[in-house]
Amino acid sequence: MYTIKDLYDLDHTLAKDYLLQFTYPWEALKGIKDLIIELGKNLGDDYTEVSENVWVHKDAKVFPSAYLGAPCIIGARTEVRHGAFIRGSALVGEDCVVGNSVELKNVILFDHVQTPHYNYVGDSILGYYSHMGAGSITSNVKSDKKLVVVHNGTENIETGLKKFGAMLGDHVEVGCNSVCNPGTVIGRNSNVYPTSCVRGVVPENSIFKNSGDIVEKTEI
Image 1 (cartoon, rainbow, N blue to C red):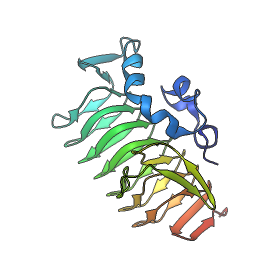
Image 2: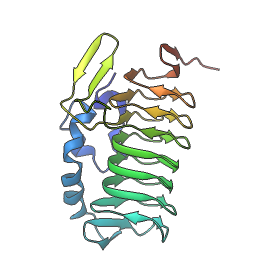
Image 3: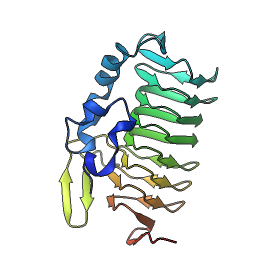
């Protein structure tokens, strides 16, 4: 439930061929910077290199007060709004929103991802049509600075990574002011209640209410 195949439709990101090399999405985090630089060389005339290793699609809208750190790619029809801070190593897909006071660092955002209000997303991959509510963040470093372990019930998966935020599957909804702790993996079509503290693996098609209270979605 936490492999790349389980979580993502790869037809909705420029990182498709890159991600196909890996089994688990967090294995891709170390190479995002180099990936963006390589992709940038072959983007074509629809993209403008506005500064060194920063490419913006001609149909994207970047507000004047936004900061675009290298390397990054901003896809078609994406909005990067006032006060957004893209620190670098950010691959942002098509039809995305990077909003006011949002900070991105070492991330892949699939198409139609929304991080619209006061979000921090670091060392993370956000799937197609995933959405982070206002004030929700990924926490990407453990307080004890130890390597991140993905917890799935009694199963513990060593990642070998000190920095690892969250892997959100396609169509995941994270409620306002929630925190995705280091090593969080949320399956496709799942919802997280507002003000939640999320840790470990949340199965697909689930509702995370709080720790120990995860229920399966039912058709209405």
